[in-house]
Length: 218
Image 1 (cartoon, rainbow, N blue to C red):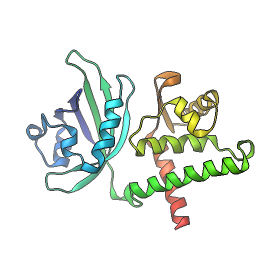
Image 2: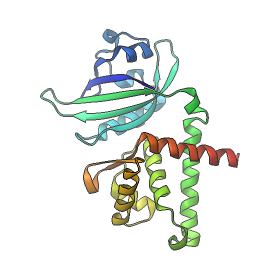
Image 3: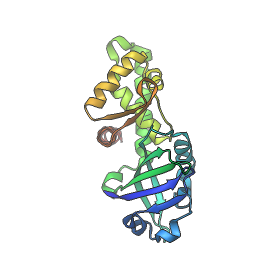
Image 4: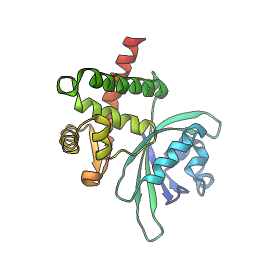
């Protein structure tokens, strides 16, 4: 569910927020102004949040992060945050769009989904090593899975990385990412060497598959 937007300076200090977002965090805009986003992010999510935002260049967004905010009363809230970096005459701005993630979307838990994604990636690599890529390759799933893992671990993944991690050539990776983008499952920024991210639809489909596989396994 879309809650609202925030605007920060280039270093992540809050300049303004929509009232609905202030209400979600149980803080006034005056209280939030001047704080870093890290000040109300769950401590366990701060390191990867910082790495991802610091690496985000102008024009490469939006970067999507799933993270926990901490309300004034200490309650933890899961949110999907889309961050874009813009250049201005004031040294740059970070603009965030915040969606609250309901409990229904967290039934399996982000940590369990990450472990399921890691196991799926491990099995794909083992299958390729044992049986070969010519008959047992699944390039589309490998690309989506690697994009999901990069996001879950707070990394930015580019097209050459996608190719290497999926065990295919850069040209083939570009063809598959273009096809996935046409389906609405991927977003690409910055051309042939740009950032590759799952769209909201892509994340939803990957997580449904991971939930299904984790339930079958356990």
